[in-house]
Image (cartoon, rainbow, N blue to C red; front, side):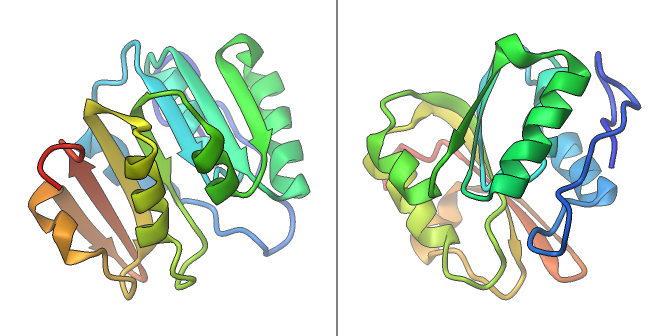
Length: 182
C-alpha cells in the first residue's frame, strides 16, 4: 500500500496486521482520487479508517486536516505509525471510537467524508443518516463511500449520486450536495 501522488508520493504505508480489516486496494484508491481531484485546504473525515490510507492520500494532495475514526486498536496503532512515518502529526487527529458514537457527539463540519465500513453489515445507510442528522458535512461537501456492491444505498440518495464505479466485490459511490432537498 502506498501514497499515489502529492507531497508524500510513493511513500509506503503500513497495513493493519491480521485479516480483520480489508485494505482499500491501490486500484480503488486511484478510482476514488480520479473522481475527485481537488483536496486543497479541505477538512477531511475518514470513517472506519483502518490504516488511514484514504485520509493520508487526501492530506498528501493538499488537504488541511484529517480526522480519523476507528474502533480497532490494531487500526489505531497502524494509523499512528503511518502518520509518524509521514511526519504529519500536526494535521491529523485520531479517535478510537465506534463511528456511530463519534458522529453523534461531533460538532465539526467537514468538506469530504470517506467511509469504508466492513462489508455487508448494514452500516452504510445508518452512517450516512448520522452524518446528515448531525450536520457534519458542509453544503458543498461530498461523501465518498467504499462498500460492497451487494449493499444498496437508500433510494432517497440516488439523486445525489455523482459517480458510481464497481470493481470486483467493491463499489465506490460519491454523493454530492447531500444536504440539499433530502
